[in-house]
Image 1 (cartoon, rainbow, N blue to C red):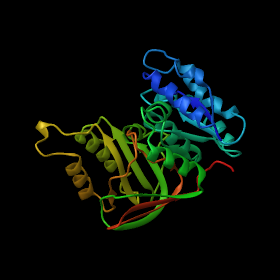
Image 2: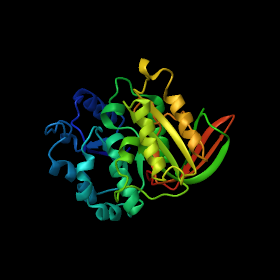
Image 3: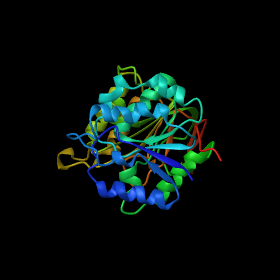
Length: 304
């Protein structure tokens, strides 16, 4: 069994019951759950003071032992405030021996991308304590894909995607679209050529998703990739004003601007059902009429 170490660098966990349910599930599965006292922590909309939340991240430098799974309690907002004060070099050095398996998504994406940009540290974009492990019903797909990523040096993800026939390989990266776009022009955005860029978001109207994708396009970032994979965009339903404009027509428009494929349909993001992706790992993508497959390797895993 593994040891989970909780961090809360972003928003206050408004659903305390869900977080406690997540802790209980992990304990009942035989895991240890450390740092539980941070769950009720709060200052304004944040999960504690600036110093407390920064210490959640910088304190990882001194976390002892192996097979430590670092799990974000939730997203929200707040991680961007910490970027200039994070001990990036210290965290990278800590990862050289018995690397931490760092997992989260949403607002946490900026810290994950910072680690990748500055020191090529691989982290896992996947479930969090409250929203996933603490869901009213624990999703079996999410749980299986979480452990698949953390236990296997090479693993596959398969889905029925939409897009042209395509094969490519490259560095897997991405995460939450809004957070990635917020890093353009900063030191914390990875500079990756020929990568496989996987994106997701929540509560963004299709035109806002388009606007962010166009920002990546105009910045030259999309065209430098080998493929774009779109996960879930929860809460993006069009309205009457859109008159037929939808997430699907938006994707068609983005595709018309690119010479590389945009593959859709991956269960990745702010849904109860999500895969876990090691950001910075190597990946081989194949899409044809039988479906889509990612083969991923080169990431840290739990030691037997």
